[in-house]
Image 1: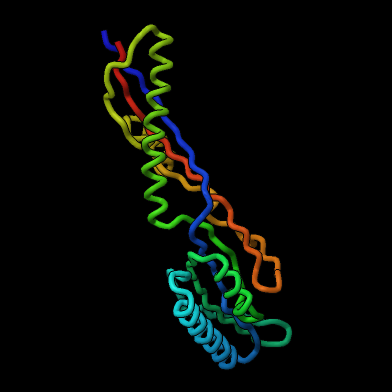
Image 2 (image 1 turned 60 degrees about the vertical axis):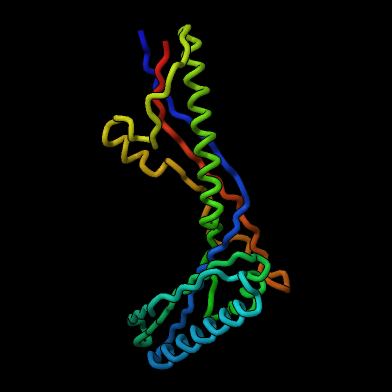
Length: 221
């Protein structure tokens, strides 16, 4: 008589990031709306020009640039009307030393560093996904073997393998587990190590922890 064994295999990877996504906020506030708009627009133009120069002089260091639409806000205080305008700029770097020097050159009263995301490139994520998928399956098999031996049985076949929540669990459990197939941790950290070293910002990368889980059904006899 066959016995079904259902287990969950897990695997974990910890490695240094190969991408840094910096979030810059170009922001100005004051009483004169037209002047604020002119100063913010000029700062954004200068920043974009600096990224183009950097990309030309450091091939491959800057891999992506994104500039959002301007956001404006106004309110009244005791002295009258106040205005603010801001533009979010996101830059993805593959060379952290170049990034640090770039920040030292561009950050000012108008251009401010909001936070840094440490991440893995698409290529690195594919490698991690492949490694962890195999390790999670091996872990599931090892768990099933333990159960089978405890019951004086032997694993004879694999019935099914799936991401968490896809082997007939209840709906709430499926939603809770839907993002746990491959789950990177520590991608973002606000205010990371921003000490001025004199030659650039000291931005110490944080290791990326990725966890993978797989659900498996085995048959034992």
